[in-house]
Length: 398
Image (cartoon, rainbow, N blue to C red; front, side):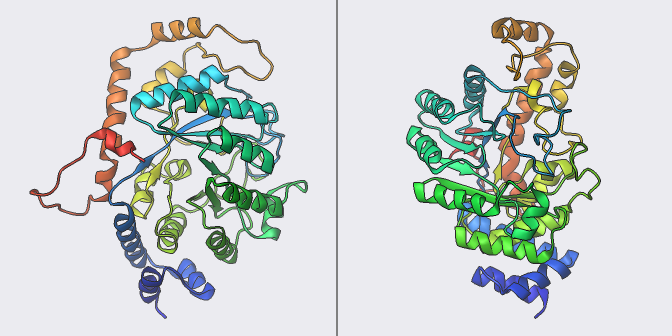
């Protein structure tokens, strides 16, 4: 069967045979990719219209007990400066995000034993108490069933845990001996059982990955039935054992995004940071390939450079570049340092800020968010009599 026929079959049936998926992934041409992306957009528009869902990312710790071979915050990386945000700092990130219109906060961090069941539960409860109309997503790795259930009872709504690969042999090539694919899968099924909206996902073109592995990933997710699927190209980090491995392919990632949209019509599908790292237009291309979620970073600017899962290229916000180069700090509660005076830090920051430039930056961000939906329909010419752009705050509705 020709690839064009396979694409139509996938669109109509929401499934293909393993051999058909292998053929499509391995042999798709540039012209066929455009057809695949077109059908993926049609499905997304049918299920979600032109809505793009915005999640505010708060990276609250880069301390991790694990030693995954591909990750920049792995335990053995002694070149990264470790940090932990305080409860007050996390709440301040949420407050700033709420003012901007965010109604979902993603609390993401390494597997840091300092943040116990009770500590994370308190964070969740405090955010929920202050912002009862907001959803909370946790992404803190493999924990026990008891911990997951406790956080659910505290008010957490969603949980993101990428499985990375569904193949046991491949998993062992990416992780040390003390980590288990079986346990990771068990965590995902436990989260579903408790009632969370669950997110899974994998890297594209990770070291030693085969196309058969990718098909196995797709089959695993058909069994799991996650609410969100996060994928992105593998990107190397200089301070990992995989520092010389080749980065993943943008086009391969876009093809997988589109296939996932057709396999899982109702899934929430992010245009990830990794897409924006590998290509300046990566996130836009992801949206055009069927994605419908973006996750802007709400973490304090001073700690973002310490949460590098992979090497970043051109990720700095121009508005903050000048400030980042100054010798000023925000209280980040580093692992072994005493707390600084948060209020005086803010005053020092304010003295050095160019408020006109900052306001221009905020306005640019707001305009960009309002235009995200328009990206999705750029190729269309809407009827002027019916086309009515919605106000910016509607872009954040869940």
